[in-house]
Image 1 (cartoon, rainbow, N blue to C red):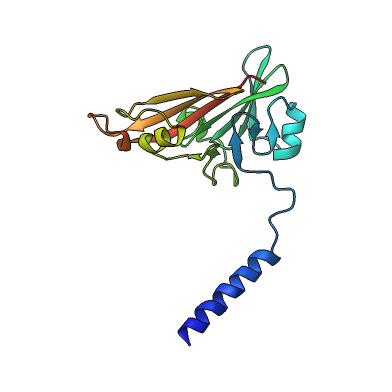
Image 2 (tube, helix red, strand yellow):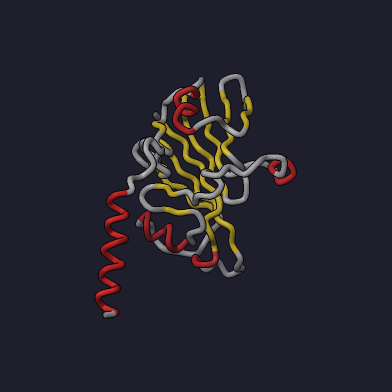
Length: 180
């Protein structure tokens, strides 16, 4: 009887998963350094990004040719000459904590951990990231940079050990800058 109930419950869950589709038109929550972020390709205009992701929480003119669009406290989309060129991610806010306290949390961007292809997730430790990137293992560090075909990725870690064990450094922030 218990075995039958387990199979019945599994069958119901499987049916529900096939009947209930994913949210229509919901952008991907993945970042591909060679392609773009959250369904927005690098090179897209500010208007195209806003049409895909919705209105930003705020914006900042960084220079005559550079603009930043903030989505919640953890995401900044960077533009050069009106085109999407990069994204800055942080687990603890992208601005000074005194400013970020004035910003509302974004229900999607601040509530969902970010994921960078090929499987790098917020909070991973240094050793895990090094294995994914197939880099030589060594002592943990606060920064790890790598290049893809079309981008440069800089990962920032926070460490808790003076001895530099790779497992003691957690991924806290990332900057992806596209060459496209």
